[in-house]
Image (tube, rainbow, N blue to C red; front, side):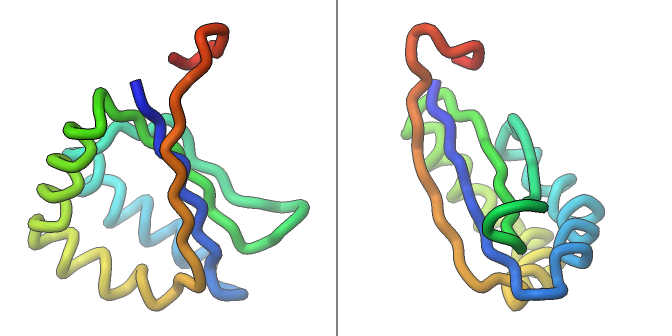
Amino acid sequence: MYYEMRTYTIKVGNVPAYLKHFEEVGLPIITKYQKLVGWWYTEIGELNQIIHIWEWESLDHRAEQRKALYSDPEWLEKFIPTAFPMLENQESKLMVAANFSPIK
């Protein structure tokens, strides 16, 4: 199993709007293609960050599902035009769980 940790830095003042837009618009669309493991935002440390983790069966599965997501008219027309202007930075890390990890 693979896990993708995505860290987005949101423009100052936009975290509440981004959270609302993702929950109401983005989440119902993206979860047709990806399995959400967890979703957080920062309160201490580097602020204005959203961290989310997605689960993938394989890297091929990830590629197929990401391609399908980016072909979905709802994602392209209802989520991206509002969400992307709120972003300052995006980082993605693919991770493999250690044998002793509670999440495998």
